[in-house]
Length: 293
Ligand SMILES: [Zn+2]
Image 1 (cartoon, rainbow, N blue to C red):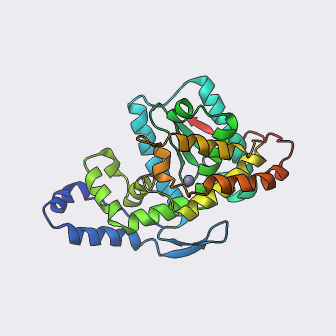
Image 2 (cartoon, rainbow, N blue to C red):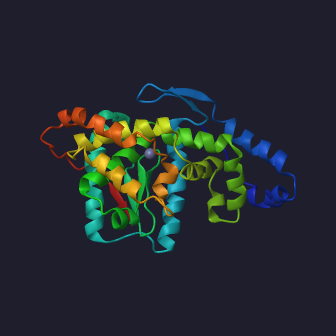
Image 3 (cartoon, rainbow, N blue to C red):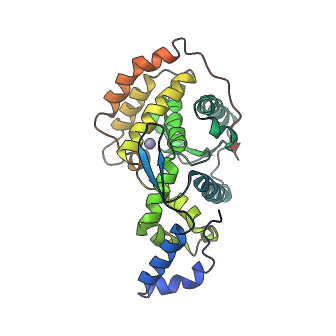
């Protein structure tokens, strides 16, 4: 399916700010929606998901958004090349990916990769559709993560992608004017060379997940991490650390990951069942993961 393009974005930008926004909005929304018929899919936990974009298109558009993001970071010299940290991220993520492919064989063909972003103030990580991930150095510096806790974060993020949450969030970005406004704001930026849906992929990263999506990612993520050989109790200590960072400067992670009150207790309740999946904590093989540099 051909993806929507917005070739005249820059030229039309001024009409947006001069009060003729409405027809432009309608046109853009139509461009978004027409090629991607609304579809209803089912998440791995059996929940029905309303999609304005297919999971396959979400992967294609996420790739464009990711390449643009990574290229910007590279120009600003913000990609970490510390071999110790790269190795740690690669090995732990690679073990999770091995288990992700066992549970979701269609992800075997994904281009699994991680950009480690040099940003000691930002506590965040994400994974787009298609297995393209990022971690911020603030995660390690501010939370003093153990390997098992880092595995829980990445397991959770990978689960968002496996469960088509990227396509879901992109659908929300496309369905609200947020995506349209973002295109207007970004049109002087190189990102404007991306298609509209790729911009939605980028905007989707800023949107909070629904609580249901969070619970799904918690459930799948703790399982991936346990099967990969990491202690499921780390899911609980991770959220305790995250919670203690609250106050005036809550971690970026919490703005896109609304935490239900019972998150810690729900994860703690899952731990015994998880332990039984891999009682000896046998470490999984390390699937190749590209560290972007
Ligand atoms: Zn999440």
